[in-house]
Length: 258
Ligand SMILES: Cc1cc2nc3c(=O)[nH]c(=O)nc-3n(C[C@H](O)[C@H](O)[C@H](O)COP(=O)(O)O)c2cc1C
Image (cartoon, rainbow, N blue to C red):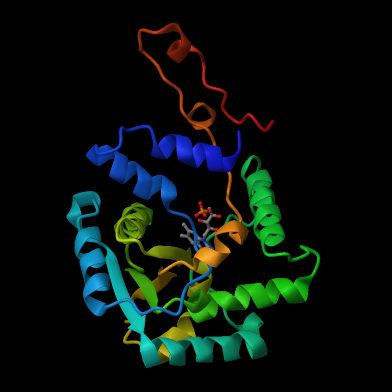
């Protein structure tokens, strides 16, 4: 089964017209978009998206998120500064937290390799071509041409549970955007350039840059080259216990890659 079929199938699991159908479509239709049209997004639209995302759940309702919304010259100046840093001294910059485990174990390592193969081949980049890969990474810092860039921060005194809360907020932004015909790309790589971001934005010393996010209208011309990422089937990550029907009592096939 192709990834496209998986997406289509889950999007159609609720009948059209049903509220669940719209939600399913927004969730399963979301993808990391890296090609944006040169078309503005109004401040009110971004505000409306955040106004929905603020209902994301968080433990004890502490709402650990902080967002810097960038557009126009503010965004362009930051992009230019980061691109300069990336070109001249990329090694001198590092995120204040580790996004990936240093030694990614299986099955995650294999999934990351699959991601890389799909991602670079869709862009026509040879994975061995380091220069081309760096050029592609640099596109993150121009927010892939999106009119809006978000910089998302968390207080460094908070624990891992609050980072969990943060994910619910990130996804809420992306789904609220998708439901409005807008696309997004979350970007941990922007955390690397927090020192540059701090020069431009009033990011408090106790704040850590978690990630950035591009937001705007997807370029439909890039739809076929966007590198669809395959998703696991439910049976590959969930076990069902205590249900009446025989098939749902079957043990789950965890880690089918092994
Ligand atoms: C928190 C987070 C950070 C990410 N950071 C980046 C990034 O820095 N650059 C990028 O191009 N994609 C980034 N991605 C996008 C992932 O690569 C993408 O979500 C994943 O490959 C699955 O593809 P899909 O979102 O199209 O389904 C990030 C995703 C998440 C959730």
